[in-house]
Length: 179
Image (cartoon, rainbow, N blue to C red; front, side):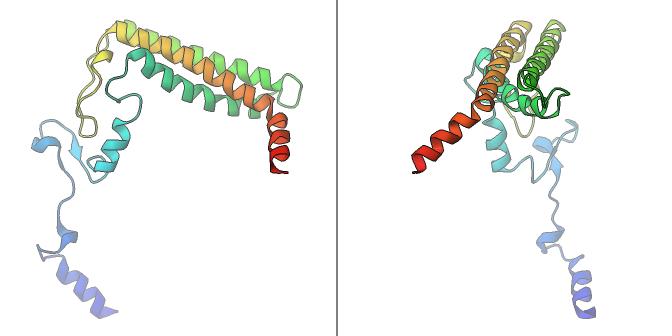
């Protein structure tokens, strides 16, 4: 065991040992920017993944961008509101969850609209997102995004509600097909 510890100690001063290389660098080689390139945010996988999200994907209008993000949020917001609302064990538990999810989507949409009215700054380029969307640099783009977010959020919540309300029908269909 002492031999292994000695080998590790000797490798600490060896500049050719890959474990001694610096892996965190200043973004674009300029420490004045205040951002860092790490193995996580500068990797090809991270860049590809984040740049393919609707918030950063190139070629989308603000309405389409908001619609995609709203659909995802509306869809997943319904579950906690149906599961944990005070009326969950009654006949109106699911519809109460739907109304609560739509209410939260409305609050989020109003928040986005308030941000749009504040004259938002242009999105900054980062290591992970070198070219942020140009459509979200003014109030009109953010208001269009908020419209899409509301429509997508309500649509996603209604779709999830329809799936939850008809789960027995889907189970019967699957048992019929499996026979």
